Length: 68
Image 1 (cartoon, rainbow, N blue to C red):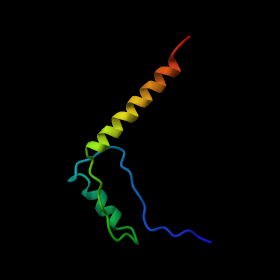
Image 2 (image 1 turned 60 degrees about the horizontal axis):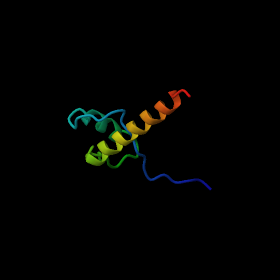
Image 3 (image 1 turned 90 degrees about the horizontal axis):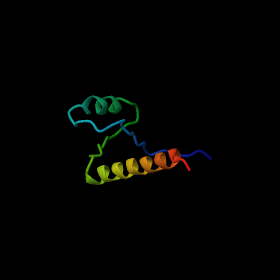
Image 4 (image 1 turned 90 degrees about the vertical axis):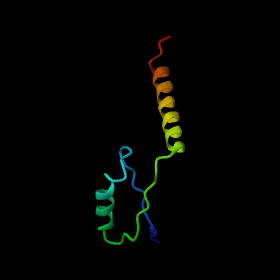
């Protein structure tokens, strides 16, 4: 049996301004089968999660470099 996809999530390399994203959105709309695009706004939750990930990576890097 074959899976059926109903959509895809596209992640950007870094946050970009909404006016700079217009070209990307228009290009995605040109793909056959795309019926809508809903941008995801970087809110406080995004920035908190980003800082938590950075802190976790720093801690793991420190532990990896720690000498006994």
